[in-house]
Length: 237
Image 1 (tube, rainbow, N blue to C red):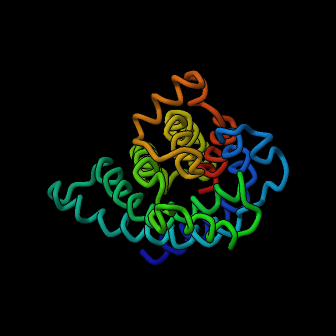
Image 2 (image 1 turned 90 degrees about the horizontal axis):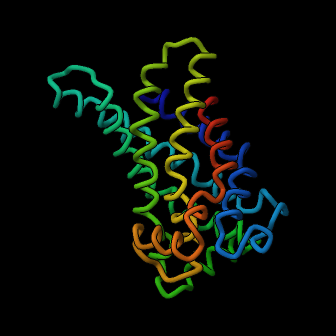
């Protein structure tokens, strides 16, 4: 358990920081005001501090819940191992991790597209009408985006623990790519919510509004950097 916790925290932090520029480009592509107006290719490491602060605690929350719930779900199945147990445990882990990842994600994305200073971003978010709840904009949309990942990624993660290194990396990359592409529309909605460019609406309502106002293709904005980021990260983790 401790090894999984520490290795997950270290790997997650390393990947998040190393591939951060791809995430910045993705957020700016998804921004309602457009790529260049949101910063273009400038300052692609803007906001990395918030990501770094949230990466290790987020991973710790995730792996604590994941490893903690695996035996619970296994006992519900009579002690027999089943891939669905890993998916369900990972889903619980994602909800726990989002308690940390969403607030730091809001700060990160505001910096990627608007602010250039960490404290300025935090003060600006806290000063909004929602107060501290503004730090949790897009929480349930983020959860809805992450759970499909859990159902695809973690049965494979468990199955490939003992696989040859190259095979595990390739499968991790492919499964991550598929999950990233399929959940891109939810990621676009999540980004718009976190940037707070419009009053918050529900996930389905936001999906319909974006498709109606900007065309269905707008729901795939940033898919290139998103798939690239997650496929590389999946091969490493």
